[in-house]
Image (cartoon, rainbow, N blue to C red; front, side, top):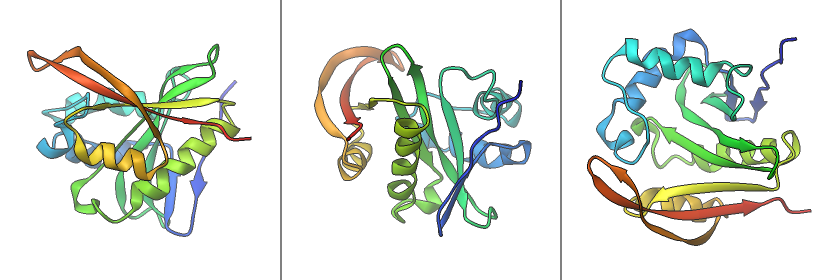
Length: 178
């Protein structure tokens, strides 16, 4: 049985399944030094990017969440990606993730897209909690989480190793409101 991938439309945005032709845009985003500085994935070649494309695009294989390509409403401009990872049906929670091609920073795109993804998680996936784990040094993402009405819950100090050094993660969360 094939699960149909959802699309979400607004006047300005289209959130849709990734397609093969998105690979150059995904590579542009996930090879850009300022985008990957705090992101957990980066690629040096288009070939290496294919693995991420499979993860993004295949709803059946990616049982741990759902990722959307974030595009203009007419589907002519690819802005970035946003989605839910580490989906736990048992605990009714998931982790939010997103990135945006730098040409579109500061234009309110993720401020519009992330609530759509959260609503999808709360309504369609029946989540109760959506978490965000942000590197403590990532000031821009922490500001974004606050603007998106995620509540700061605390800091896990030196809890992961990245590039050979310990990093701390700030925890943000949004709960389903009834």
